[in-house]
Image (cartoon, rainbow, N blue to C red; front, side):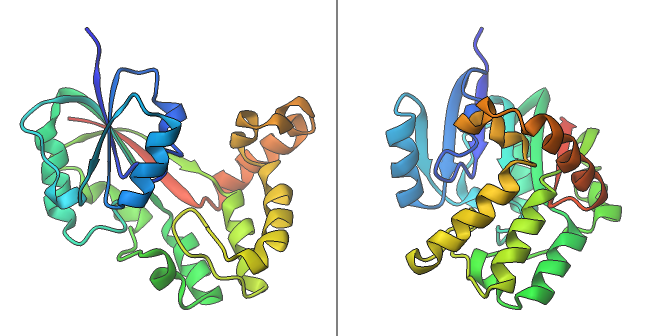
Length: 227
């Protein structure tokens, strides 16, 4: 029997490649524009435009829920977590990714408008992160991730380049410089294996360095939980 998978806050479909072969994929996002872009890339999935607080298909429908870079944006965190709990089957798995608190504070110092530019509304304290989930979920694993993104954003902010959304979209006038920074940092990120750069095996040396950076100073924290 095929699993029902929810990608809550799917954006433009950037995370779909990680889950597209896991079952029936349901994608939800607050932005119609982002949904339209995701549909063009992956037309065979189910799409809904909705706030996370308002999306609830009923009890115990999903086997897995993926919630990447969403919880720091929502207005009513308790309502979103309650919805997720209700929609997830008993024994179902929830994958959450949120920004690392030290990273958020460092980026705010570099760019005081950082939260306004990308719509972050809260900082999750790493030491007390489990408190948000302990009453409803069992934490199975916590992973530190994407440390090299800190360097990428550090370079953008040092050159006064503003980002326009969660994905780091920038204005066209800054695009050349941004591309240089991206090429510099992508060698240290495992996502390089999803690009044509994987055919240049420099990543054999750079990826272990990127993994160490993520352990020491991650950009995000991935929490895997079970209902």
